[in-house]
Image (cartoon, rainbow, N blue to C red; front, top):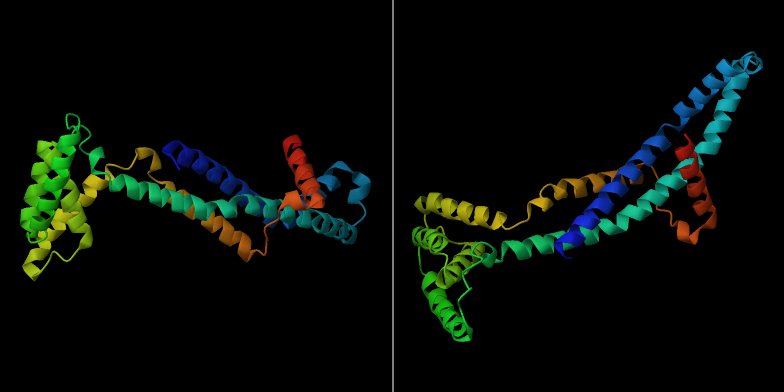
Length: 249
């Protein structure tokens, strides 16, 4: 997915999470709503009020029996509309972020501006040579090279940036306990630079994915199963009627 496609899908998932959560809440409040409806009927219709508690309870139970299955269908439809999208979106998001974090050219966008075909060949050879040397370097030396690359911002600097990040990602830099502070400093710097490559629009999306998963879990615990209204005309009719009633309310 492109960034815009991710943002559009995020909006869809957020909206559908809200829909599912509100439909679960409405399903849970069925008994309370039925009781409130009876109270309103008693206030508006004196003859009904005089029919007594037993009759009032009977009508309340009838409302509950009618409304709860319908609300469950609505919640099931909302679950079906959300659940299949979460895993696909999460995978696409992780892939996109990983790609951005691994693209050192986002940090040095002008590094290759004046590098032609021959220069690219030379850069590839330099990268291969530097790779061999970097494998033997200490974390302290790698930190110096990384900081220098951030300052130089040219084509060789881009190669150094990529190579140091690859080396840090492999791990195993701390040979002795006294190496730990400098390794941590290098790791934190690299991770901080890589995080800057992630578009700010994607910050916080993981929390919305978690909210979507929690809504699915709530539906599961409540026994609300997914309902595909495209395959169930009766369910489609119920969802349509409930939506129309919600608009009227």
